[in-house]
Every structure is written in C-alpha cells, then in structure tokens.
Image 1 (cartoon, rainbow, N blue to C red):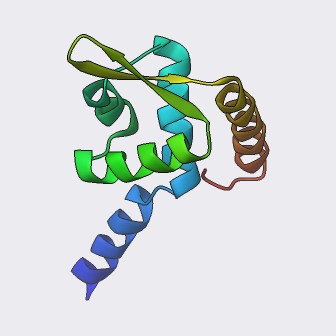
Image 2: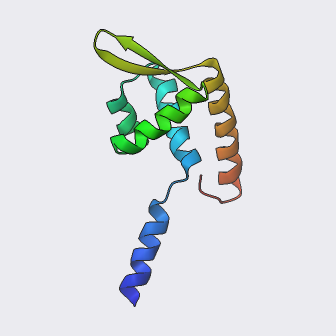
Image 3: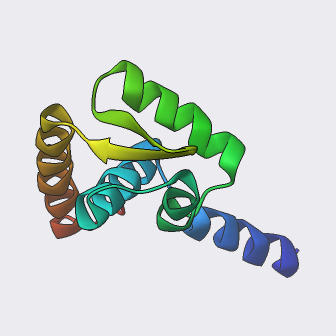
Length: 102
C-alpha cells in the first residue's frame, strides 16, 4: 500500500502539461535561434514521436517554421511564436506565484 502511494506521488510529480511542453519547445527555439529536431527533443525532454506531433501542430498554427539547409531540417520561431512564448511566460509566472506547477 505504501509503495503504491509512493509511485502515485512520483507519477504526479513527473506530469507536465502540454502547455508546459510547448513552452519548453518555444523557449528552446528562442534561446537557440534555430534548432534541429534532436535539439528540441532534449530541450523539451520528449521522444521523437511525441515531439513530431507537437511540431506539426506548431507549424499548422504558424508558431514555428521549418527551414531546410542542405539535407537537414531546422525549426525557428515566427513572430507569432515569439508572441505566444511571451504569453506563456506570463501565464507560467502567474501560476507559479499562486503555487500551481506549469
């Protein structure tokens, strides 16, 4: 019984919202300027299959754009993506001030 409650606490502490993951992706791109998918995987702490789904959503919503250089694919923020990141930073700060993990 005690072991089950410990596992549940661990699962809860590791959960990240999709907004938090998107924040990590956008923030990594903001810091790096332009990044390949592998860098975004590390920045967002996601496996490639989950990252790819989010990248497609971000592309469809014009928050990021794909750049092809030689045979390599990179991503970078659009103006709309920078604005979204600024809003997410405000929300993150507000939630943390009231004790809610983002």
